[in-house]
Length: 528
Image (cartoon, rainbow, N blue to C red; front, side, top):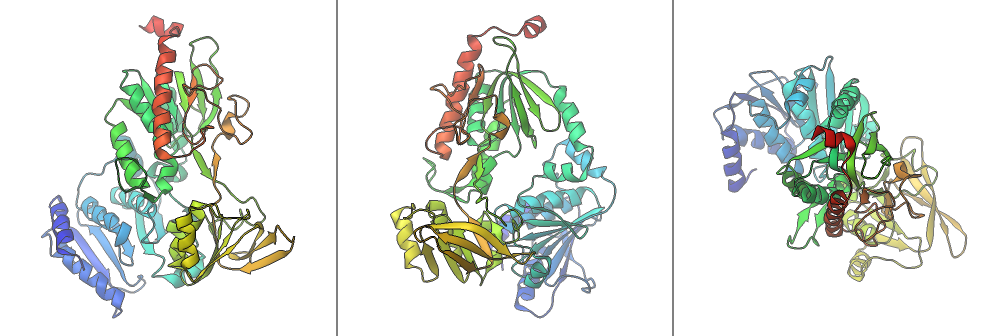
């Protein structure tokens, strides 16, 4: 099951176990059960602290395995074969069950331990989903710290009947005590915020006690990370407010145009960015969303950033790098069937539509790449492009046209998502050349039509373009003194990772120049 190299690596990891770990396998005579049984046996053979114990398989998903701590009794389950992206989740479950320290701050650990009540999480994944492991690992860490919490990873492709019954059409999909808890990528802090009703207030109180910053970054993507690093290297007090560190980069699978790095992935690049940021004295306030920016009352005074949880952060200069999000079709049925057939990540959700017919909305690079990717999984792909021609690179167009299960329809304006009340059954589109309306029967719709800047909270303060992009100057300055902006939320013409990073660095340097040329606020002078 595991090759020699992987066994050697796993054996080295298991040497970090401090307390014994029990493995339980629930199998039958199927081929997948045989694979799982082999995997469990091989893991147990690599450490004398890992043992296999027998248990009753009734009322258990088959095939599945249970990882149990003998010291605490914590339990984590894997329904299906936890390979692919989820193999790391299995390794971490073993380590955390065996007493290896969790990489969490003391406050978060205590918050999890103090949670009262019973929390039974079920997490549906696809093994090709790059966001799923983060959710599985977050829930497993909670289970490792609090025995009232359990989590089971469920491979949706293997438990298709269960997926159909619950109408799971997007991953990760998390159920709590039998009810849908959430879809898509979720950070640990976000999960805790949803189940711990006092989390928002505690976070706001903590932030309100912080001293003002010299440079405050709003947004934790490539632009924000670069800006924070450049600012911190200048020796000024720097903070980051981020809803999710990494931003949209977390949903980017393959990156092959990041100069000096031939190939990487979005999540991997986010890890590298976060590691680089933590090398400096930068205060990262994750899982916080900005609600308003208030201009300083006097030249060089403090700019205020209000957060949705009620906290207020002050800084002598601010950089806005809130990025962008996937553009939606804004047609009837899209909102109603989001996560029920309407999807925005073909890499994550594609495997759930194996053998079915789907549509891709958009004929740019993202749309055609999605169609090519999906064509290897689904029965048939229909690409609908609003324009009279595709906008994707010629090499991608040739590839798509060479595949036998991709149809491309031009001049197609999607007008409605159709469904039966529980899931997508098709879509309606209008032929823009004839005005005729057409219906396409399908099970999934993947929307790939560009980006929308995350700037709604800035309306009425910072000057925006008609499209909602922040207007910036040569030093990345906005119309408000001391407020700068960078990345996909601005009016720079090309939305690229490497450009966002350069813009972030430029904004930080512009902010530093602004700081040395403006008076220090009176209360800061007094404190000095």
